[in-house]
Amino acid sequence: MKYDLSILIPARNEMFTARTVQDIIENKRGKTEVIVGMDGRWSEPGVEDHPDVRILYLGEAVGQRAMTNRLARLSKAKYLMKVDAHCSFDEGFDSKLMADMQDDWTTVPTMKNLHAFDWVCPDGHKRYQGPSGPCTECGKETTRDVIWYAKPSPNSTSYRFDKTLKFQYFGEYKAKQEGDLVESMSLQGSCFMLTRDKYWELNICDEVAGSWGHQGSEVALKTWLSGGRVVVNKKTWYAHMFRTQGGDFSFPWPARESEIEKARQHLRGIFLEDKWPLAKHKLQWLVDKFEPVPDWHNPNSAPPAPQAVSNKGIIYYTDNKLKLKIAHKVQKQLLHISADKNIPIVSASLKPMAKMGKNIHISAERGYLTMFKQILAALEASTAEIIFHCEHDMLYHPSHFDFTPPKKDKFYYNHNFWRVRDDGFAVHWDANQVSGLCAYREHLLSFYRQRIKEVESQVEGESFDRRYEPGGRDKSQYDVWWSEFPNIDIRHQGNLTKSKWSPNDFRDKSTCVNWQESTIDKIPGWDGLAEWVKSLA
Image 1: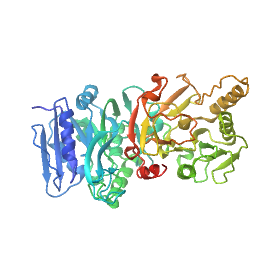
Image 2: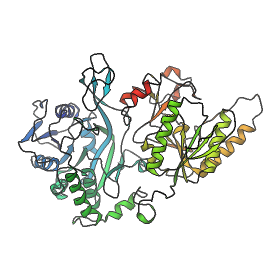
Image 3: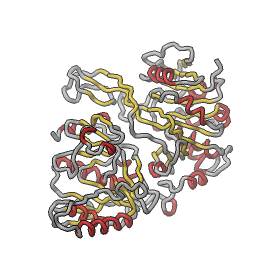
Image 4: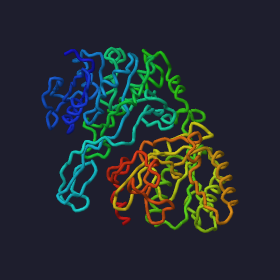
């Protein structure tokens, strides 16, 4: 058969190579073949025979870039796709990508997170994928239970690199993306597709850069600077299993710092100094195309000094009646984020809080109007241009604060959150929550000053219009974004809003949008949180 697409899988002693190949075979709908490279070691379990699968085995490891090149030489297809050996795919992903493909593109589907497996002990205790080891609850031995599930969120479509060419997610630009075919400054690297001609013309896998490392930046830079485009196709998806916990759940290729630094230095020397011979554009052209880019468009083009004033700020408000175990966890997390990202905190509380940033103490009884006044007091005390609302019972992920509102006259809500109760059960639905609100300070000031006037002018006995969320249901006044990892809304007896644990709990069923159920141990970005949540019971 003459194939249109060859999927290249460089693998070294990977436990999920066979499962990845199986997933591709089951979900491909076009004339697509799979070429697997076993780099120095066979994968266990082995890959099953199939007429659309070829295997290349090298007795001596050559590294990911070199192996990918060897696999590419075996292909006669028009398109090549490199994928990691621990991914799952949407039905018809290959046909969907090829239907829109242009010859000067490098493309990739939306990236989801792959829940590949759990560790399970004889007593039924489960631990989310990670290094092997005994059960953390009872100490008994565990076995791997393969799940192979693409999580519904996050759905990553926007990536960048920093001034060292290190990969970063680009949440600020994601908020600007419109349509099904969207541009991205860079790539994550676990999957990308381009023509076979472009693969060789651009030397996509430059072996001089070393075994592996910074591949997403390399591929994206070569595509953009040569006059092409990096395009994410949101009509389809793949799911990638992330391994960052070390032990026997780390990278299959040796992660020697010397090898990683070799790739960094090689790529920096070429691209930061505009020395790549095939470039039609300078690097600054690409940076300016996606302006503003964090790290690149700071004043004087230099990273801010630790004492520099941030244009982002956190306002934190509390009634000081929350269970201390929750309050301290949330505060500690916010203080770490504030220090790491140079985002100052202004807190408004009903008791003095000397250690929670600049503190505004309000002497009042807990209530809706008091909360509005706390928010306004914190806004007036802040000097930041952009404000993140932070509530005392929400655990915020650092990626939440990477967002920058595109417009000054809109309110923005992060929809990537899970509501969690103390038995570990978690639910999500798409909703605007003040705890996920971000907007420009002047816009927020106007809203809360007017809101307090309206509440204070209400006649006693009239129904109280709470309207927590600025913008209400008027879609012209707000927009939404999804941070790379979710925030955790901790439910407890003192929540102002009623908890909902089933679609039946909604009086207005139309507001139950994108309902999902899970457990805390399966939520990405929060390893180790499950035991703490269950200790709240």
